[in-house]
Image 1: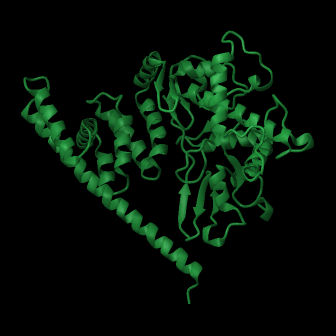
Image 2: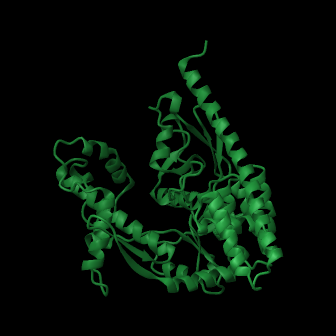
Image 3: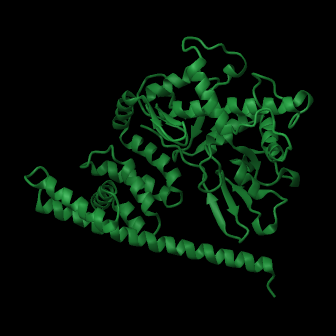
Length: 450
């Protein structure tokens, strides 16, 4: 007789299987829809060639017809028609993968968009791009595929991407949009690596403030383990802060600083802009904390012998001159050794703990649960085979996991929702769900710019 636990897991598995089947059905329907929209564009082009008298009116009518019938905006209609036409004319592998249900419509739209820098008539570039991106998309989420696709596009057409990035930097600006309740949205448009570095810095300062205040109130730390102003935080301190959050919430009286981390981040950014001197910041205490991003650049490009794009790990390509500027004041560099497929094989050294961590961050680049995009720099290092059960502190048994996905493996979890993970050669992490399903997460390959 089946137990309630067996019933729970069996029915859970049936639900997931049916959802996956429905996703394939939806993808096939989306492929048919895209083909029809592509045909609609073809009919317009055959009827009224672009640039001829009446073309703009005919196009406007087509957009109005599709937007009205599908109950979408004019912009959404134009985008759907453009993607449908592109899939029929320039992306045969993407179209086939969508029609077979291997990727979603969102994957297909993102692939088309990532290839926008290519010349429409450059069939070779589109083919080389699809050959790398479509197999990756079939095994990954849209978000992960997007970063990879951008890097592949840069590898296929490096000069075009570098020039586009350089031109885009001329659009740097700040805007203010007034909202309700006395609040305004302050937006700054800057290169992606600088934006992530700035976010990382205000986050680090915010955590430092939270930890220091918690230490002062005696809520999370005592004695020599308490963080001091200006002191670099350890992983243990971060973990203790996270573990104490629920305790903080239950206190009868709030801590001295009851702000959430998001509030602290916003206040710090405002204070830096309003009060800091732009010519010289005093590097003491919290001012000494620097933002961190991980950038990979070829040695020849770093030495300015060529202008190949660099890669902002997990986010896509960046212009080489910006990467060289970031490399100059970097606290440390790490050499990466790749195999011909772009997979990381080793770094300079494995033995010291910090170097092992750097190797894992360079290999994983984000949390290794399938689909998760949490950057490796803020993840925890997990023993796939629990250390308490004899798991070795070895690169073949370690990977980066975010707090939420790390908790899935916790031995205190009920068997009905406890996951396990096993690492095989090459850094492939195989996850086993409570229902017994297997999900492989392959470390993302490096795109090798030529």
